[in-house]
Length: 375
Ligand SMILES: C[S@@+](CC[C@H](N)C(=O)[O-])C[C@H]1O[C@@H](n2cnc3c(N)ncnc32)[C@H](O)[C@@H]1O
Image 1 (cartoon, rainbow, N blue to C red):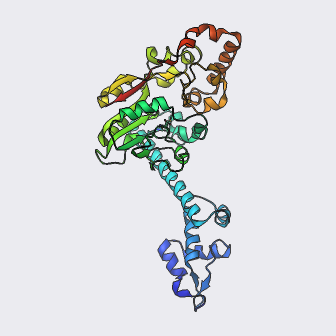
Image 2 (cartoon, protein in one colour; image 1 turned 180 degrees about the horizontal axis):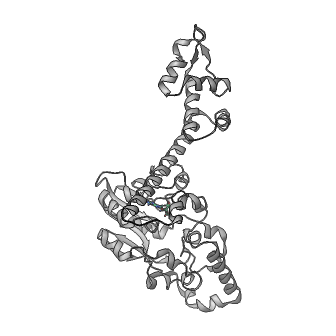
Image 3 (cartoon, rainbow, N blue to C red; image 1 turned 30 degrees about the vertical axis):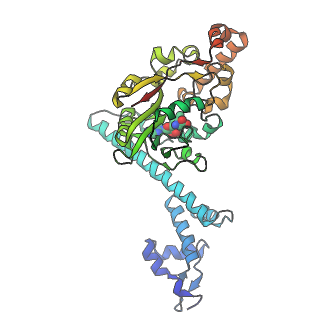
C-alpha cells in the first residue's frame, strides 16, 4: 500500500457510503475535481480525510445544482476555508429547503382551490416561483431601517417580565430586547443573512407554522410584519399557542384610521387601497388574540424609516434609498411610484404641500394609525 492507506477509504467504500457511482468518482479524478491522494497495493484509488472533505463539498454543491466547472472554481478558491464552505453550504441548503417548502405550500393551495372548483389565475401560478418579497427587496432594508428607541421602549415595556421572547418576522432584529433570551423567526434568507453578528439565533420559518411546542416562550412579539403574512389570523393564533403573552406592533389599515389620516396615502398614493383590500381589520386581529389596543404616536424625527416615519420630513420620500427600504413602494409598482414622487416633488417646490399640511409643523408626534396590540 502506498501513502498510509490505513486511514484512507477505497473508492468502492466511498461509492457505497455516498451513493455516487465508482465511474463518477473516476471522472472527478480525471478532471482534477477530487483526486484521491493514495492507491492501495492493488492499485485502487484511496481517499484521505482531506480528499473526503473536498468530496463532501463537491457533492453538496452538486446537490444544490451547481455545474462541475463552477464547483471546481468554488472549492479551489484559496480564500475559502473548510468552515467557510460549510457555512455557505448550510445557508444555501436552508434557502433551498425554504424554497421547496414554499413551492409545496403553493401546490397545496392550488390543489385545495381545484378541489373547490376554483382555477387560479396564470399570474398566481407564476408568483409561486418568484422570490419572496423580502428576498427581492430585503438587501435595501438596513440602509434606513433601524431601532426607533421611543417605540422600542413601548414594545419592551409591553413584554412585561418575560424572560424568553420569540420575535416573529424578525428581519434584521431591530426591536429585539437586548436584556432577554430572544429566539427569532424569519422566512427570508436575505433578511436572515443581514442579521448583525451576535444577534439572537434565528430560525427559518413562517408565522403561520411556528416550529415550537405550546407555551415554549414567556412572550411572542411581531413588529411591522403581520401585514406581510399570507394568513395573519393563523400566524397570530400560532403566537398565542407558543407564548403566554403576545405583543404586536401593526397599523390600522382602514380608510379613516390610516389612509385618510396620512397625507402621503391620501393625496399622492391612493393605490395603497388596493394593497390592503381584503386584509383582516386591526380590530379583528386584536380579537383573535384577545388583545388590548394602544395607539403609538410617531415622533417627528423617527429613527426607523418605515412608511409613515417621515410624515414631517416630506423631502425624504423623494430619496430612492428611503423608498426602497419600504415594501409599499415596490408593491404599488413603478408607475404609481413615479407618479406619486413626481407630484410630491412639484408640490414641495411650488409650496402647495406646505400650504396643505401647515398644521403638521406644530406637532412633535403624529397619530397615523399605528397600534400596539398586547394580549
Ligand atoms: C417590514 S419587515 C420587519 C422586520 C422587523 N420585524 C423589523 O421591525 O425590523 C417584515 C418582515 O416580515 C417577514 N415576513 C414575511 N412573511 C412572513 C411570514 N409569513 N411569517 C413571518 N415573517 C414574515 C419578512 O421577511 C420581513 O423580514
